[in-house]
Amino acid sequence: MNQPKAYGAFEKRGDNTFRTSTFIEWGSESEKSIGACLLLNPGKANFDKRFEQYHSLQILGHATGEIQIDPTMRQLIQLLEGIYGTDHPLKGRFHIYNLFTLQNTSSSHAIDQFESLVNRGEYDISESLVVLKELQSHPWILLGWSVEQNSRWKNLELTKDLWRRQISESKVPTFGKKHINRDDYYHPCPLISTQRPTTLTELITLYKQKFKKQRFPAHAIKPNLLIDSKPVEDSNELDYGWFKSPTNPESIVRGFSHLRIKNSFKLRAYLYTERGNGNGVVYAIPIDKDLPYPEECDQSDDPFLSAPKPSFALDDFMQAIEGDKTPLSYLQASILFHELKEFGARWHGTSWSRDIILPLNEGQKTHFDYCEWEMLKDEPEIIEPHFYYSFEGNPIAIFHTINDIGTVTLNRYVHTFNKEDYTMQVELTCIATAATLRDDIYK
Image (cartoon, rainbow, N blue to C red; front, side, top):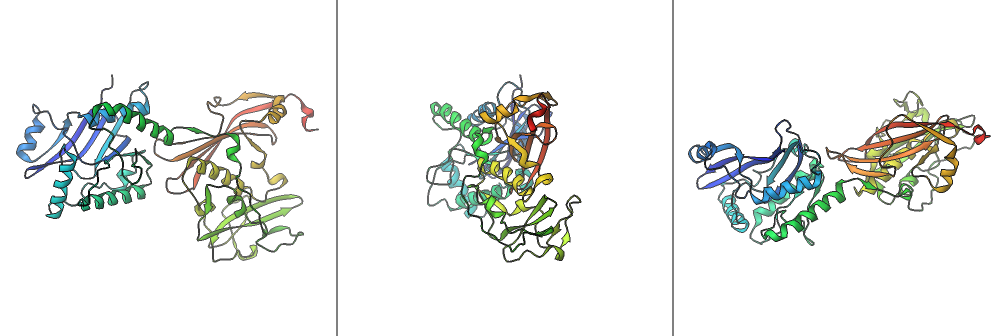
């Protein structure tokens, strides 16, 4: 059985002991992070007195190695096993950070000691912070530095602020049992042992609500706000070739309640028509700029369309989109991306507009009864649109579609978002193709 072990690094400074780093490890072949937590300060976990490291710490003032597992670590071990399950052995490290590294089993006394050391210039409040790159190596961070509060603990509040800013900059998702009125989080291991199972259940539930796959009904993919779109550019109905779109692509964004356009940008588009065919290209441009005429622009890097591109346009219009970072916002952003990519498309210019997002309604099921599917990939376990965070902490939105252009195909769209914004990488996979039993279906 894969029994976890705990490791720590310690320093002695005068009469005080500081545990400067700690992690729990499952297996020894992987150093990959499986999570992290930020607590108040180190408890009593230390070296076994029979081990050489214990004596090295007393004599040399520093030591590193395996340490005994204390109640907080046991609670965290149960949390990790509850999150990831016990069917497959865990492999990797769970890192334990603290607001300050002074070792003391009494939280109130520890904070008073910490405040005194800082006020005397013997401890720097930023000492426990870790570099951004290390934080970003974690898929998530559990916050649990306790909800104790006292007006005299000024340095503690400053340290919390430093950590909050660092975590915010890292874009690593967090969770924890939050105080109802403050930005503080209950410790994952209550002092009263009978309360620990309840806290453990609450934390596992909070994790699953945020990080496990969240399924959506079919209507979640639709815009949910009514928008009156007004023309933004003059246009001649006889225009052909590239011209400025009179239709505002921003109306598509405003149809989704969890998304918005950043204040400093606006969306504008060019359209292209030729003998009934049509294409379009959307750009995010500064709010104080006007869309130039196509002939005033250089061409974009897209060899297919050779579209005009203003020199001041963003490379990706999704850079101008922001939202509330909820799972639904990422699903809406994935739909928005495809809608804007095919803005202005007509006839042979269309592709995405023929995608029907699954599951099918009753009328659509009847229409596709003529299909016999030849599976190219494994059948999806979840057919509904769904969302989750990757192991690395990236938001991911997935949905499946049927497209009947030419060969009927069953497709999977995987949208992997960057942690810091709504830009994404899209992976399209054909899962199956269908032979037509009724050739007259389109006649």
